Image (cartoon, rainbow, N blue to C red; front, side):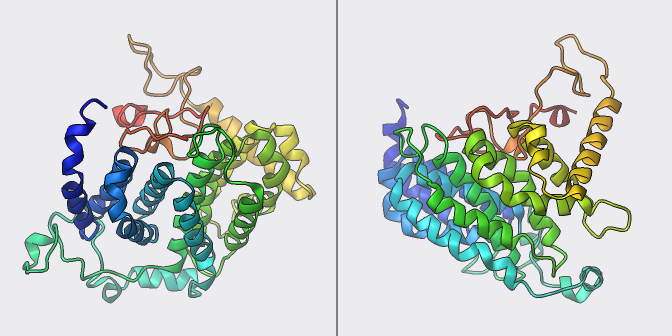
Amino acid sequence: EEYKVFLAPFVPILLQALLMCFHDESWPVRDEACLACGIFCIAYPEECEPELPILFQRWTEQLTDQIWSVREDAAVALGDAITAYGTSMTDQVLVVLRRDLPCAKSQPAMTQEEYKRRQNDIDSHTDSQLYSCGSLAPKLRKGGAGRIGCGDCQVTRPKAPWEATDGCVYLIRELCVRLCTAGGANGTGMMVLTDDILLPIMEELVDVCRVRHFPQSDDLRTTLWKQLPVIANALGKQRFKRIYLQLFLELLMKNLDGSRPGGSTSQLSVHAAGQCAGELGNLVGNSIFRGRLEEDWQGQVFDRVMEERRQRMQRLPSGPVMEDGFSPFGPSGVMMPTSPMGGRLNASGGSRIGVASSGGATGSQFVTPGTSPVDVL
């Protein structure tokens, strides 16, 4: 904080460099540029305000990116902008959210067989965007006067409508975490995102996630189930249980029911749905959660999934405990991250690069990146 004043004169130049990075072909560069600009807005709101219109345009473009982590971090950056600029930015974000959330309904229909055939078609992947770090791309291509960063950004595959909806799921999470938690972006501790605003958005979210006319719809629901527990914790037990829980139960149980032999639901989606059901049950109480299930088959599905999860936990090895008390197998009694965001948020609710932002979800346990058992191994 004491050095903030010394860096302030260089903020405009640094911001211009970051804006150029938004055009980079390498998605990790674009990813980090999103986060860095959001952090700049929190630290230097006045210095960044002249570039805010172009920043907002870049963030909303990245919110529909082909890479899921870029979409998520664009949502995090927009959340940082809400923290920095308050109501005026919130209103702009809500306009984008309402516009893009239903986009998955306009996704062209495609069967699973057509999707697999396209995945194996060489012509369909020619001149498509690189999904590695992109380090080899500039070495294999001539440069040019208009080239920026490590690529010229002229060769990309079209963005899919469902990806815009997927980005909106992360954006809803950021709005709830920052504006529905005590001490949120308004700084007064009062709730900003009221049910009059949020309820229609959540109803639209459930409705659009029911689509099944394209294979990636399972990926969309996977994102929903991973983010819903975070949203629920941000809203609080009583508010979520009273108003929002019932909206998601039918879709959640149908997703879990697809895990039966012969079901067409992807295993990633089923696993995410099972984790979501378990975490929501822990939040509102398993007996209350089950009591909200209106059909007998829904209760049977929930019981089966919870029993399977219990058996898997019992089969987990305790493993050897090292001298410092750490076990790579996760010994009982150690709090592991229950949030689907995992290491992308730290204990203060900050972004995955370790910078805390105000308005983070309180009461959630997150592991600092690089310190989880998986990272250590």
